[in-house]
Length: 321
Ligand code: TYM
Image 1: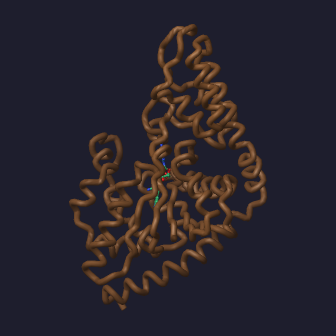
Image 2 (image 1 turned 180 degrees about the horizontal axis):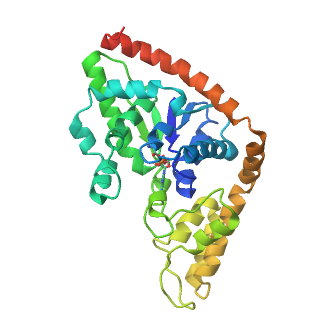
Image 3 (image 1 turned 120 degrees about the vertical axis):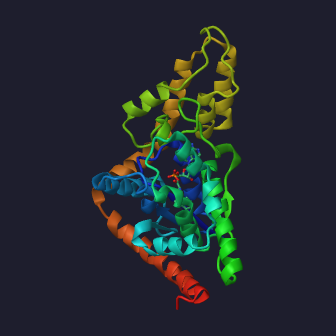
């Protein structure tokens, strides 16, 4: 099974990215799959216009993945822009992509509806570049959060259109979205997202993470009353970082009353800090060792080999060679 995914370096990754995607990416590398993961920096350019920040974020995401357990011997890991064939294939795919398919993309519709962002053409054609990322490597499966499901479906539609037009070329990809982490909820009850400012960090300093956890929205009830279990943001996150016995214990405290949200938040904070403690240490060491460039360069070389094979086929099929 060939697995492919990516993360956009538009900030520091949060617990939503980790639970919805990064944790799966790392687990999948252990299962005899061929895993390909990219830092999607071309995608980040649609919103990020500061070269120093771009450099900081792309290196940061690379460090984060490696610290969280990505093994460059087991998975191909690279910067998207190190393989310009992504942009080349995106152009070729754009020539067969119906305009209406892009018009129907939720992300584009949201951007248009909010009207608070520059609506550049890159935001509109974003799903084509993502299709190129996936099809260039003929990925079978794309592990992502639910917010990216439609983009994977669009990639599949584009692959089908290309295959019907030029002959069988691309594998039709499937999204891989585990139900329980499809949408991780942020501190305010909406989907956790950098753009909603409701994230909980992974590698931020402990004081920042504490502040974020303490800001989680809760029901307004008296301390003595039982705390409702349903749709509770703290419990939802706690479940992801604890055993079922620990979860049951916290739920029992909720039901008993007199426990208080402050204690629940402290329990969650401890779990989060504990969960990422080793990764934090690894990240500090990695950041000092400075062999990231070398690791990413080696990853790009491996990715390039696959990409060249696909593009050779595309050139023949389209008559560009
Ligand atoms: P990005 O960078 O926004 O998010 C990275 C991954 O994290 C997932 N995610 C979530 N999952 C559950 N709950 C949440 N609250 C949450 N927030 C984010 C995302 O679904 C994603 O899997 N366009 C992509 C990056 C990309 C890509 C690709 C992905 C570029 N090329 C090719 C797959 C294949 C993006 O912006 O993800």
